[in-house]
Length: 301
Image 1 (cartoon, rainbow, N blue to C red):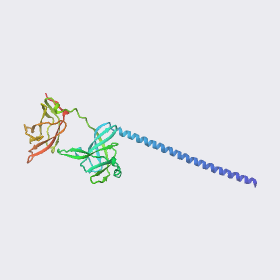
Image 2 (image 1 turned 90 degrees about the vertical axis):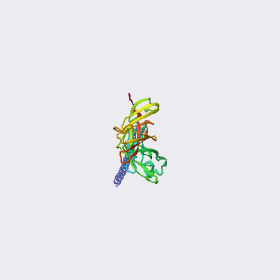
Image 3 (image 1 turned 60 degrees about the vertical axis):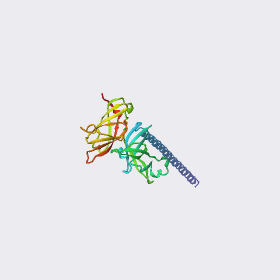
Image 4 (image 1 turned 135 degrees about the vertical axis):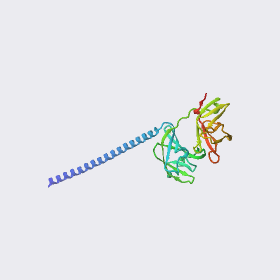
């Protein structure tokens, strides 16, 4: 009987020891699992942070510093770039940071905010303030509208851009910037007063009207005594006078197209002129814009 009691006691002790060891082993396994999970999470955070930094560097390296034209694409027809700019804004890249300037259709949008409308209300210090831009339309008319400088983190990636109008209500929108094209640097400019006496040719940029008539380019330029005169020829003989700086000029010829000698007040700036056409049932004065491009100046022997 005594021997049996001893045997039972030994078995009880062994069972208890086994339970304790099993518990310790389970606890150790659980601790090991937690440690491994913690390490994995740390590694994942490090990987995510590294990927984020790499993406940021990639974004900065997308374009070299400079000025570009780029499409500014919106999600709503009421919120778009002014029609005079064909959906494009001016993208400036400096030290890898990108900002696009866009001229809108009117002055009805008074602020923009990079983010959601609900956050804009309490983040006034980060609201984008408007600039006043003057746009020139294809018919020669001009208008003042609001423009904005919008920071761009990456090309071809949609981002939130909220707006508020004159009625004081915020709206959510999504936009993205794409198709950047470098803006060609202009050649050296020539001031009128610095132009030596002589005969030249010069390319012009012609805008305005319905597009049915135009002034041929290049035009003849004559410099004399600090004054510059341009001989311009229309591709139509139906222009019976032009008005430049309030003075009326009659054609010197109408063969092959009406020819006028007009003063040039500035190079490389839009100059407004009026042409009167008799092509319709009644004469019509139409406003045009000429830009005399000094970088195309050629001397005529």
